[in-house]
Image 1 (cartoon, rainbow, N blue to C red):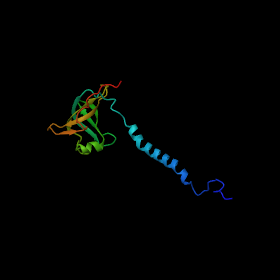
Image 2: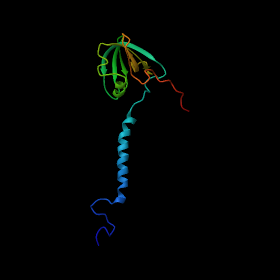
Image 3: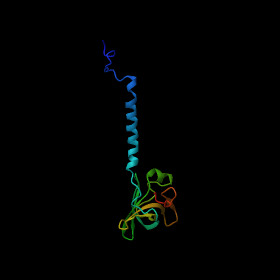
Image 4: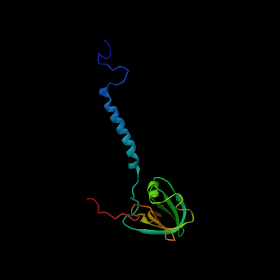
Length: 150
């Protein structure tokens, strides 16, 4: 009697009845790989999204990078780190890697850090002395605070 008639699997592979679960496992693993980066993204919890603040100074460095771009700003001798959006969003709003250069004078309006000892801010708009403005969020302003969930 051969192995097939005895109910044993041969080394030729799995029969059609056994192809479902491995494909489901591959689909699950793929979706897990796609979702994991979204779960790793940090929130705006460090910023007071209910208040607006404007910081003016001189750009010392502009980091054109993902997951967020950053502006380092010298404002009255204090070194500020301003967080702006991801590259794909900034490009949609007209930004390029050359939008800001060391030495540029700017004003950044955004949400200040909850801890005032941290010289950080979530930047929503950048304005130059000549009136040009770069929008760094969809609305160009802080989101309207929502009521806390119950």
